[in-house]
Amino acid sequence: MLFLILLLLQSLPTAISQQVDEAVTYMECTDGYEWDHERQHCRDINECETIPGACKGAMKCFNHYGGYLCLPRSASIITHNDVPPNNEPGAAPPPAASRQPPVLPAGGEGVGSTSCPPGYSPNQEEQCVDVDECELDIHSCQPSQECVNTEGGYNCKCPEGYQLVGTECIDINECRFRYCQHRCVNSPGSFTCQCEPGFTLGADNRSCVDVNECEMGVPCEQRCFNTYGSFLCRCEQGYELSGDGLTCQDIDECSYSNYLCHYECVNEPGRFSCVCPDGYQLLGTRICQDVNECETGQHQCAENQMCTNVYGGFRCVPQNQCQEPYVQVSDNRCLCHATTAGCQDKPASIVYRYMSITSDRSVPSDIFQIQATSIYPGAYNTFHIKAGDEQSDFYIRQINNISAMLVLAKQLTGPQDFVLDLEMVTVNPVMSYQSSSVLRLTVYVGPYSF
Image (cartoon, rainbow, N blue to C red; front, side, top):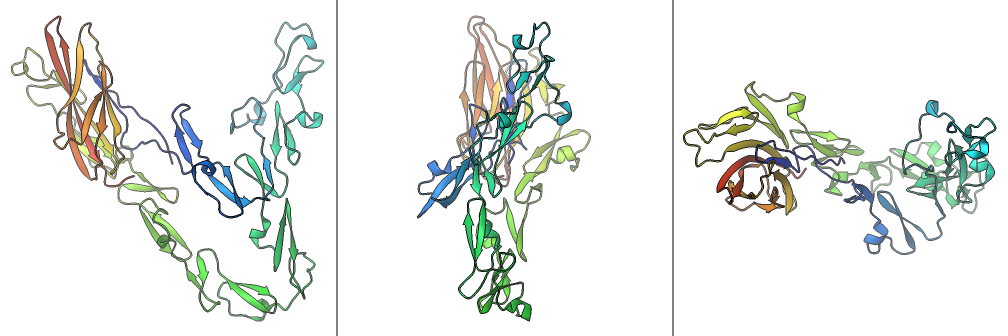
């Protein structure tokens, strides 16, 4: 899943606003990760610490990125230590064509007078050449790992028969691939096949020599496996063996979980697929993402209208919403001059803004920020919801003298719309001056929780 934060800013003479959550962007980590507010990225969740009894019986819990493994306590675990020196974990090495030997700084008096970057050493031509840490045995790879030299450093590679899981090398259980006909014995980095009594290991060291009923036309619908004195029928992925032991029937994956798909799961022979509602598109195989009709041109707004994207669709709003005695001075901004008749008791300006939120959003939740642009000595600013919040679904939390946050107080189920007048009142007791400005925010609540 994608994680972005957009802030909507206002350009008022006395106030601007910032949108915390817009129509098509939201902050979210994929399963097995949580947001680190201090470092501003997703970090792995250690399920072995957070899930009581994650592994049962004689199994031991091993954490890795995005999940965890339950393995026998006798499993061989090798710590992976192949992060290149002087690079952040996961950083890609520079392209091979761009790797040039570092040159010693000008003005040096000899090889010994200047030091090279880590991973390099000076030669007689006063050039920094790569140090082969693997050959010199100055690496920190584990005894069972292989050291691979790189420009300016080295990598630690898992040996054959092991696979990298997170930062650990874990033995590959080749037995799960059913290489052996009878019994398979997994060993660190390898496996062996064994036969039942009365069988001998074949020339391929995998099969056991016996009468192969599968070659004699047994009625298995999909797959046949020879056994001692008999045979077994097996099915392809997505199917299960019927009660007769011969035919295969489809597995309805959709009936096993409500979380396979973002919106709707459709069972198909041997598999399943996910579909999305109108206004959304499938992202990958399971996630539904809102379609921005305003960007793709899939809207029907007129030339004098402005397209506003919302979750699951779009809205067409007039480009000029100013009503007398207000006059339009810029996009979405209306002004009422103090010298104009009827403006004395009205807000000096009205700015129109639009945003969309998902249905059933967790509360309380900060959704929109408003901020003053001009600061006058001795002036005090207060913020409040002037209109549109009859059911107290929202409230204003003032941050300081120049900014405030609109907070969602109740879970809202869409689709439904709210038009909120967010007013900032400025009072200067020294100059006996008071003015106000309004931000007219339209909040569209989408029909789904995504």
